[in-house]
View 1: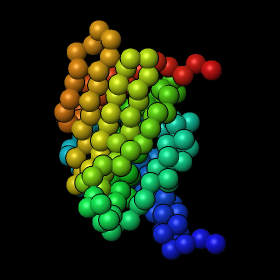
View 2 (view 1 turned 90 degrees about the vertical axis):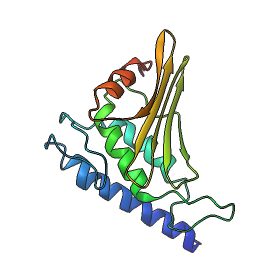
View 3 (view 1 turned 90 degrees about the horizontal axis):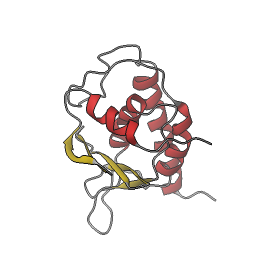
View 4 (view 1 turned 180 degrees about the vertical axis):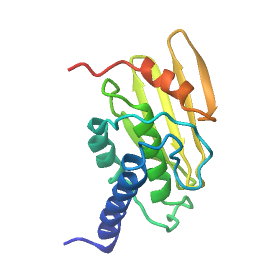
Length: 167
């Protein structure tokens, strides 16, 4: 029997996916498409690689997604933060990029996608207020930490440095 929190989580996962489809996939042809209430980011439209979506959504749906605060004082993961993360991932991941190795909630109600592969570390954090920041470090690469910025060029270059998933 499903509990109220399970039903709420399932509903939120469906809402997140619907938001993702609405302003990522359908708006991907618009070069100025940005998530609502986000910093202005210039993007180049391209096909969304759905291959990474399923494992990412599976991990997201395991998080507690509500508007309530949790007993330990942290905020539950906000669906808006997740939708904004998905929006960004749709613009920087390609067919060779492996899905995130983990999806982790933040104390502020946001969510972080992490890749820790062969000495490369990439962490992308999306907060409910629309802020998206990331950290990248790897062998022979200067570490970067800060906001995604005005364009996706830098993060796109960093994502391309991750080891490819060649099965």
